[in-house]
Amino acid sequence: MQWDAETGGDRLTMKALLLDFDGTIMDTNDIIIASWQHTFRTLRGREGDRRTILGTFGEPLELSMRNLFPEVPSEKSLWTYRNYQRENFLSCIHLFPGVREMLDELQSRGCPMALVTSRLKYTTDQALDAFDLRRYFPVIVTADEVPRYKPDPQCAQIAMDRLGVVPEETVMVGDTVHDILCAKNAGVTAVLVAWSMTLSGKGRSDFAPSEAPNALIDTPEQLLEMI
Image (cartoon, rainbow, N blue to C red):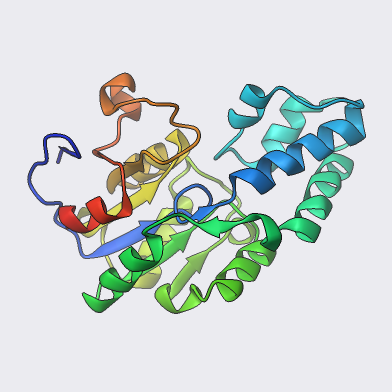
C-alpha cells in the first residue's frame, strides 16, 4: 500500500492504530535537546553538536549514551540526562497542532489505538495525565516493558496482542526511521509524519527501499483522510 499527501491514493485498510509519542503526538523536541545539552555541559564542559543530537532521536537512550559518552559510566550519563528532564519536562512540551482533533475523530470512529513509545513510563505518564491523553489509549507500551527497543518489533507485537489485532489490519505512525523499521519488522503498514524534526525535508523517495514508509503525511488531518 502506497499513499502520499501530494498524489493521494487508495485508503489504508486498517482496524487498529499504533502511535509513537515523541515527535509524533507530542512535541518534545525542545526538552530532548535541552536535556542533551545539559548532559554535554555537565560531562564535557561544552554543548554538543545539534546535528549529532538530532541523530539520536528515536534511538534507545542507553545506546546513545554509550556512543556519545563512552568514557562515562552509563549510570552517570543517564542520571544526568533523566534528572534534568524530569525536573523540566512538562514546562517544555506541547501537542502538535491538529493532534487532539485527530485523536478525537479516531476515537469517535471506534478505532482501537495503542501508544508505543521508547520513552520510560514515568515521563510518559506525566504527559498523558497533564494533557488528558490517557483516555485515547487503552493500550500503552513504554520502554520499561520491553527488553528490545525499536526497530525491534517487540513493542508493536505486544500492543497488537493487547488490542487483539493482527499485523495485516494495523497501521503504525511514527517520526523516525526506527519507527518505520519497527513497523516493517512487525509486518504492519508504516506511516511517517513529515512534521518530524528528524525528517529534514525528506520525501518518501529519499529513503532506501528497506527504510521507506508506506505513507508520508504532512498533517494529522491527512491520516484521517487515509483511513
